[in-house]
Length: 223
Length: 150
Image (cartoon, rainbow over all chains, first blue to last red; front, side, top):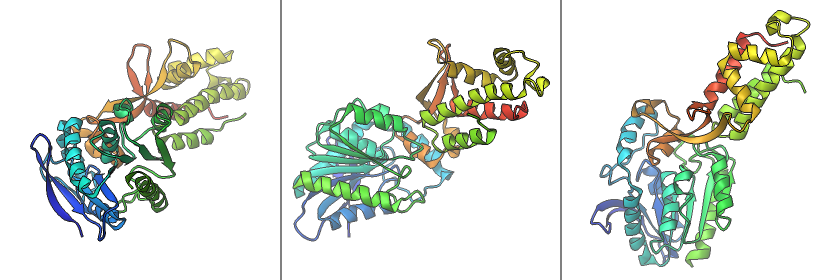
């Protein structure tokens, strides 16, 4: 079982995190960056899945700077406007400080990889650009490609996108492939958020295939 | 090649299912454009009043343009002239009041992209823009209104 912990970023901001450790000696550390729903049930289960695979895993609450302790199980549209207003103040540069704090905690287990979904997928790319002492990055369907395509990754990076994602144009995924041939960019016959087993968009086959790739990637780079 | 309205409708449905696919959007535009030419050929002798008594296809297209600004814009788009309209994917800001109507995918992606969503737009020569799928939908509806099926 995992536990809730606090992390302190370089600017002194204290954020929430969820941490799970493997039963034996860790293979390394993993920083997990959530969707816009924060450290909710599914994200905590993902942290525990990585611990089950042998990694010390820490999910950082990257929305805490907007509303401390924000997390939600409500995937419905009834509170879209509330969260939309909240996110107007989001600052990716501050999020990088939070990821750095999580990476330092995860580094107690050795080399550290970073992964994340949607919001966390886009931040995974930004983390790969920032370095932060991370060793490898594997991100999932980070939207807003034009906002990060100019940020060249400094560490080994792979990305996973859905062919039927109505939030991310395939033309933009293609542009990423052309610009960064060294980055493995995988496509799956699925929509946005295909890994989230708590949502109807969940695609078990695509989730299994992409998760296996991430584990292989981390095994290759974090050993 | 013969394109029935049902074929265009199917292509439009496919484009709506992939709302950020420029290729699918362009395909619908070309099908609409081509259908108008086919309709003229099919109707010019059998039902001249339905093609507005036009003597040639260019005159027919001009009369269609007058009847349907959406079709006119499609014609200009398909003409691919250097100073004509073009398709582009752009970030479009979503007012907070409209958030409840977003798909969950648009919602999630908009949140960490300065409250914007990606949309295929038609950029006009004056630099203004129209949502491409709105124009396609209107043009298709106009085909039905103008009873152009052979």
